[in-house]
Image 1 (tube, one colour):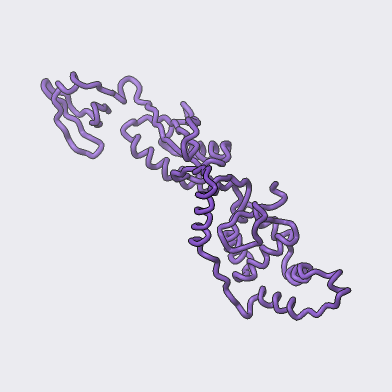
Image 2 (tube, one colour):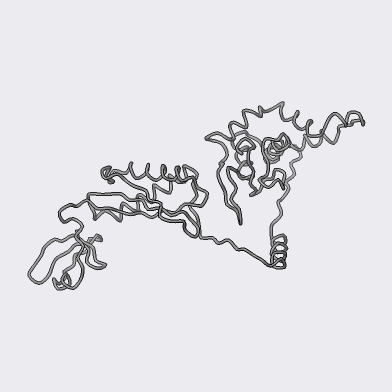
Length: 295
């Protein structure tokens, strides 16, 4: 198996004036021998056919390096074409503009299969990274503004162009029943000093769910996705997305939309979770929240 310039193929026969080569596309070529004298010839299978294949990989900033190494090397070592001696290696090459860049190095006995191997490894690596919750980044830039006027203009534009969340009304939902019950409560001044609205909400929901069990499930292996996340100018560690938590509550706990949002707000009221910047209550939006126990 040889490479001459941009031509790769298996040598089938060598004649006095030309050499017969079959490419990886199964095309037979007759190459003048003079070309071998004019160009550098790379013989992949001469003496020792074992060859190294390099697969570049980029992951998002904030990814846990040990987990990245585990996810990628698991794929390499499980592939039947990859040799275990020499063993696969993962080299941390650089801090890129938008990603942490690695090179996966593996060795194979049949160099003509290197292109197919790279494709198969890329497919498996993508699945493995998703399995471990590791993000594959896209090109991005941080913009630092020094002009207060420009910052104010951008903030004003973003406020005007950011879609507002839609409040859905479910007259027979659990959350609506809670709101109706709260509005119907008639408390005198002495009772108001002892009983808060939040306590009434808590007692209603706690009649139906076990908060401790719910928290364990949310933080468990099949719970909401908790990881470091990047947004604009900051990186927020060990947090989850409000809208994803709502979907999880609806799927695993059989709550409807408003009930799921009410549960999230209950967890905030009880001091179990909070918005990462403490600016919002619980919303079904792309907002970051974290468990106090994770901090």
